[in-house]
Image (cartoon, rainbow, N blue to C red):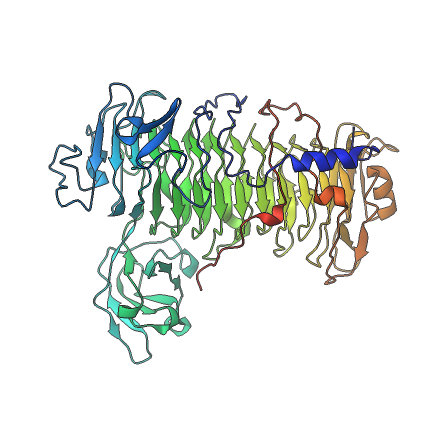
Length: 625
């Protein structure tokens, strides 16, 4: 059955009702991953976590869910035969010279990270508190049954921060600003663009926005006096022009890396061979790193990392660097980072029930590298039930030599440029059962799914609705950097797009036969008029039945006939806002149809289910002023 069959509306409504947009909180699905080389941890015992909390409420305080129920934290994280060590920074008995027992705990997490401090199968249990340190584990595990674990005590809030207290030393200036001499090391960058600057200033938990000159100072902003090589002071106006003593706890960034395993070469990049692997991180919040763009505040190591219920937030650059192999990230958030939430190159990895919200608050160019996540050189990896929203760039972006990856059951809403972007020799991608909505127009695109210099990908059973520009655009790469085409675009819902009052540029559909292109349901979309603000054709169909070739034209009537739908489409003038009321079956329906997943390398053999309306997603966060 296709969406154009008489019974399609009822099937669509039933299927969408079976989906949950709280796809982020579904924790016990035990779906098998059929991607070569990807062997994630079993999901059968994963808890149903409150998505706005890194803690897991299904077990009593101090216990953690394991395969057969709950277990006290003292024994839940160490492997059989392993030892549990303790860190309690606020305990007056804590001292790094202690043996690390519950009665005589270590004071810092870094004490556990020393070479030889933990052996494969050991765990370090961390009591609640704020830890101002950079954790560089020098020893790892040997496999999935013998990891080294760093875990917060369940129910206690552990924060690792890159910032130090800076309450004193502020002197009022004549213009009303406050000045404090620079006391840390220089934070070098490779450009004079102030967006790339690395200083971090926090007042009362609010990250202040850096500016490029003193003249730009305003409440909630700060300026670094001096050069990158020789900084002399920080000059700030605190939120609401409060004095320092009334602005809350004031902190200044001092550390670039918050968690990253370190081998013999301290300068090795994240995920490099020779750095420790098989490390587990549970329940910790990382924030306020002074990292530059493209540098991750958190790295899971060379291979086999397991990162669960972790937050990485409010860093200066990249939140989580996924580089390495066979990592699993589960119920982990990368929110409100300066450039990117997620990034790097992962081989045989799994990212599930995770999120990226409000990233790129510093305003990096999203056409360069910014937004929810950008993967490069990633293969045989699954991104499942992921929530990417309100990012200053694409929600999920595969850019550069990515092959055989799967994105499924995810919600990508309110991002800039594109919800899902496949680019530059990205091949063999399966995108199935995703909801991609409300993408914001940026310069020349606000596309739901955008592909360029990418080929042999499959877009099936997705709902692409109410995006600012085109729903699906298989763009011919102007620079011809890699082949385009040979895609399978089947059984999607593409409804009510081009709401931003801009042109649709090109609505695309592609398959192996003329019948394939009629399996996707188009309805209520808007298209700009060729010859006004458009510079290329509006519609692309391959293959078109008359010529068994392709159709690229601005002929709306022929487009409707070839795809067998889009009867509610209309042409709009530039700047004219378009608002559609999709058919009831679409508003209540499901991503794609109720058909089984498309047979494709990396496809999950089980149905991926989500549910509800994408409008129920959390609102856009408040970024720094």
